[in-house]
Length: 396
Image (cartoon, rainbow, N blue to C red; front, side):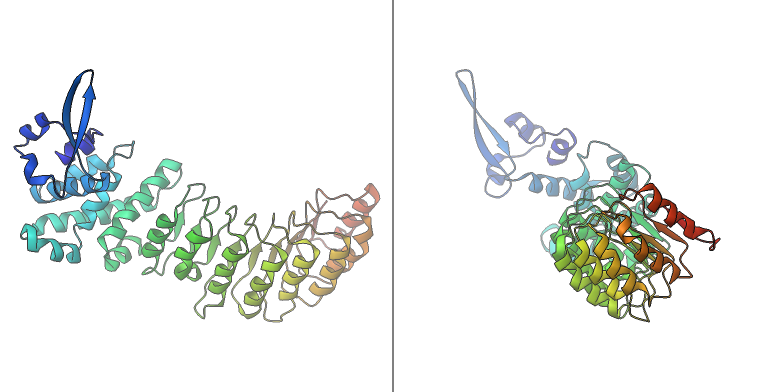
């Protein structure tokens, strides 16, 4: 009855439903069902409901796990998972959770031995489903299905299964899909036992500080970490800074564009970068850094061990006086090859400083200066710096 209710989106049951399933209300009212008085015109009747939808979902999962023929369980799960309206999402998470030895150990005292074949086939189904979904995240629906399968993985509480299913995956992308703190905990659980995931793209996932806290233990494991367009704030960026300080940090490319970072929060990030020797790309566009924040960031590049080659400071509130500091600070950095200063408040006053910056960096290949307020003369002078440097592009 519980499963039929899940399948038909029904949470209210009548005496007729109980008779159909040979149930006596008195047996279940204390723990599983509640009576509700329903008025219809002048008549009054009693209907029944589970105390919470979660209880109905769990009872439905338990019933199918214990009664469906093990030979048909995979077909049954696949059909439920293929529905697009999400009605079976929680139900399937409970089914996956019932395959956990710990869950079986607790429940078998009351329900008897769990069918071993069913346990094995549910585990195999979860394994194949994660493998199948992990390589296909083109559409939002694909990403949602992958996230659901990772929830099944989480409910199974089986680290070895996570390693087997994600052991060959190099990229996980949830770009644009809203992730709750629980989703972030599930993702962290899936990534923790895996060492192959190089690129984790969580740009525009509406992650806030609470969600990032759940992801904290695994952030250092990825070579390319995308967290742009999330409302992290200074406290969230501090969690990223902690990942940069880990001895085992592998982060080479870090995207923190439009995350609400301010000049005060930049101090902790810079402190972490001063001890980190893995980061080669740093994207900080769209944050309210101002001249003081940019100066802090550029100070990190003074370190002779710093390997940052790409620095994006598009739309960060940089002014002419800030460029003076930037040119001076970056003069000792030999690794910089790309610098983006577009969309700031730069005028002809800073052209000499930019000239010094460019001439002091023989390895610089690209400097972005578009959407500032240079005069035609200033633009011409900046572009002329390309002539003696065939490998250099100055985009104004």
